[in-house]
Length: 214
Image (cartoon, rainbow, N blue to C red; front, side, top):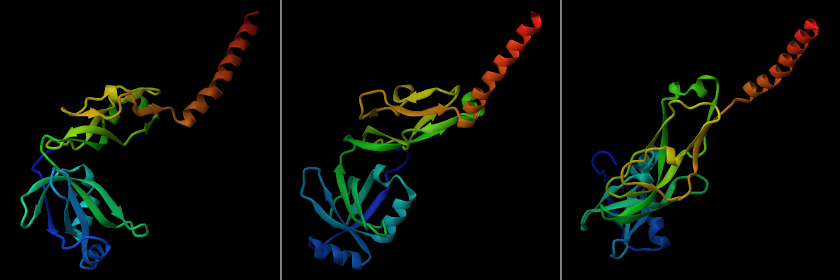
């Protein structure tokens, strides 16, 4: 993870249960809990607007945060779950897990494709079909990569990119053992149809030349 670990400021929440959670929401807060690290869970609440802004920026669940709660020591955490309103799709509860910098966690890391202009297959009208827009990796909590970069240079129509052909960030590995597909370059349907239509015409020309020779 590039750069400084961002702060996530929360308040300790008085009380537990549905009643306390509803009170937090009425006050413009999102209730949550911090667990793990060999200590008791801590009930917290975060400002709704701040959490929503972070969620809309993306990668919230793939970001390591420095959690600051008054009266408690700062601790590194990562989000392990967000409950949302089924109608409005807004956050209603958050689960955070304490981590040491050397802790290993499974995270979905987004994939970025580069050098499309250097792929002959795409220049010829091929279509890049993305099978996995993100890949689940085992990563170190103190060094979470922002993305996986996949180079498309030299790809032809029909080529397939698997995880073994990608250079992964140092210290990471896939959670899946098999060599799974990330993307491939397919021929557009129009190109395939055009090729099929051309084949009979070539045969007819060849036959006409043969008849003339006789």
